[in-house]
Amino acid sequence: MELRRVFPFLGLLALSSCQSVPPPPPLVSRPVAVNVDCTGNDVSFVVRPWHLELDEGDEVTWQLANATQTIEIRKRQSAWPFNANKFTGTQADPPTARAMKPGQRGKSFRYSIAVTCQGAEGARTVELDPDMYIKR
Image (cartoon, rainbow, N blue to C red; front, side, top):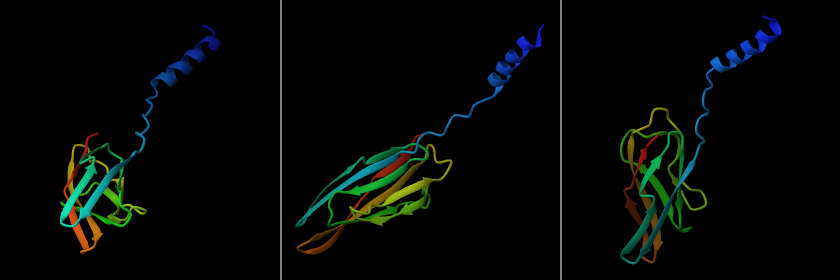
């Protein structure tokens, strides 16, 4: 057999035996919309999504609807899936959670959202209690 015919075959054989590592999934920033309305003694609110499902590696940003309010994210358990956190903020500078720790798949995390409303009666803090789950 001629060497010219063998070398292309060997090249294909070598390429097919190499395992390619799939690239990591793209990082996704997941927003949580927070809208709190404090009027007199009444409070109404919307947190969307209430139950946040994340993929490993995702980031979270809590987006406050009202520019006059402040927001704080409070961990409700000692374990927390992120290394880089900004727990307080405003509409212009929202709280964020980034740099997810490895091995978070299948875990749930409880946290609360504290929003401070400014009204005629002064400042008032409303605490909301959603959660997040790392699904993949």
